[in-house]
Image (tube, rainbow, N blue to C red; front, side, top):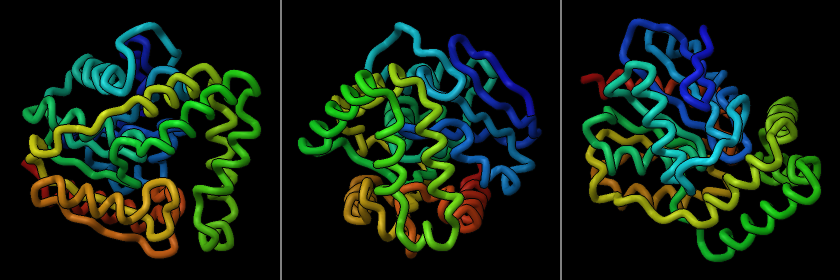
Length: 260
């Protein structure tokens, strides 16, 4: 495992010799969101970027909004010498994956979307804008407590209290300015051109996800040609953390099936 400096972004590169897999985290996450999946991807080359303003990547002036973040990922992947890759994302990262698959279909071999989201509804846009202001004004402690408590299924908290601790720590370590910028970008996000997504797509939804409910995943399935949907029982929004074994198995099977 090596760290790559790709412009302003830091990414972990597994160094595997197989096809490339790019893992894109969501709001409040970083490359560690996908750590439970890594053993299942040992023979792939896995790139895990921290998005600008998250994890170890500094927030830098650049192209605004989620389209700007998607472009930054694309640039970083190409700097790493990768022209075509499988893409997997969590939450906000699934929207970046959708943009890339729609806008650059020649570069995307497949999509695997954990906790997949559509463009936010008006109430969600308002809540995200308010959360951005809270991060800017009060830092991350209160947000970490509320998000980690609300986004994980009760069954997951009982079965593995470390899951909530992981999510809380992930949020606590975010740069408030970077987190606020991502909240604002997501609040302003538009839908991807789903009709342009033609690659094999797997949607993985938590049965008890309050952030990206199953109905949202079903709507996305209907918009993307031949997309498949798997629902994980007793699971909330942080699918890779709450159901790591199932998440890893599903991702690996989809990658193997989608091999070029």
